[in-house]
Image (cartoon, rainbow, N blue to C red):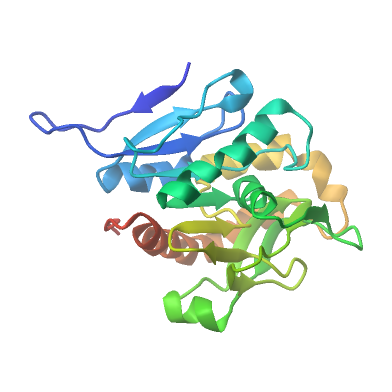
Length: 245
């Protein structure tokens, strides 16, 4: 069953909900969830691979986030198709939506873009440079290095605005319409999450372009403070609520 995480002070009325879509039993909303809770939201957590339904409307939600996972946006499983089709709900209702990695790839697929591996077989697993576009720089400041864990990338959908680009996978962040956003990289990882990913995903370090686990953790010490500060500001832009530093 899906769950709702509350951080209610005594005497407060019910807070606005953010739908958080996860893809494994032990997946976490990480720092995204922490920051949204601190900003006054409630997390309505659903796991479609485990049978949780997605709402027919976001009338009772302030927005939605679809997180990443080890599966592909092109996989034939029913829940993948169901999630991708479900994106018509936030788009039609113009509710804030954020897709992270797999979630961004689903958004691209939904909007007619393709999701595919790099033509040279390269992956992004570790820390890689990020360059904002002119539209991205106008929106906000961006980190120069971001954390990745993916083997596929997405096309920029028609009518979408590219916000950030990279050397290996050109499309790193985009905005579609007023309230839909997709990012290829992971700013949500806590240190504990990164350690789990490094241990459980170690077999992927042999892939072309991947970094070794020690580089993931050492890079965190260098780059994570800037990435966290960016995430705080970005969530405030997406969901229209101040996210405390």
